[in-house]
Length: 239
Image (cartoon, helix red, strand yellow):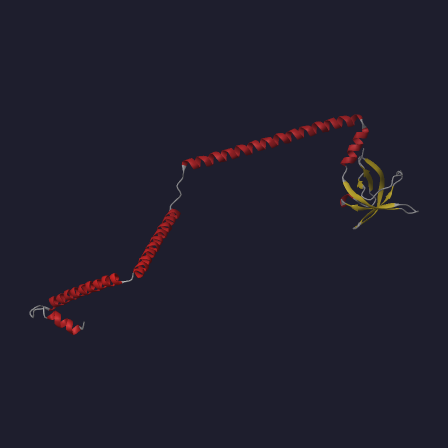
C-alpha cells in the first residue's frame, strides 16, 4: 500500500483538534491493526495453499519437520550430557567409606605378605648358612686327619690366573704360552702351576710377560704328562 494512501486513510479517522503526540499514537495503532490484518490474510492464504497441496508434498514436509525435531532433540541431549560431564569434572571426588576401608585392608594384606616373604627368605638363608657352616666344620675335621683332603681343597679354591694356549717342544727345552686372566698375579719370575681337577700336573716359571700373553718354562720334577690347551694355571698353594 502506498504511504500517502495509508496517511490519507488513517487521517480520515483523526480529529483535527488531536495533539501531535496523540496523533502519533493513533498512527501506530492503525499500523498495528493493518499488520494484524495482513497476517490474518497471509495465514488464510497459507491454509488455502496447504489444503490444495499434493499429498506427497505434505508428506515430505511432515518428514522434514520430524527430522528437524529429532535433530533438535539430539542436540539438546548432547548439550545436557556435556553439561553433566563438565559438572562431574569440576565437582570434587566424594570419598566412599567402604572403598577406603577396602584400600586400607589391601595395603595391610600386602604388607603382611611382604613380611612373610622376608621371614621366609631369612629363614632359608639362615638354614643355608648353618648347613654351610656345618659342612665346613665337618670338612675341616676331616682335613685335620687327612692332609690329602686339605691339599685337594686348597688346590680347588686357588684363584684361576691363566689358561694354556700352546705347548712348544724344542730339543733345547720345551715351554708353554698362556693367556693371562689376572695380570696382577702374573709377573716375570713368578711360579705358576697347572691344575687338573683337584691336583697339580706340574709347575712352571714365568720367563716373559707381553700384552698378548706370557711364556713359562717347566721346573724340575715335571711329570711325564704333557700340558694341554685350556689347562688352568694357578698360584701353587702353600700347604
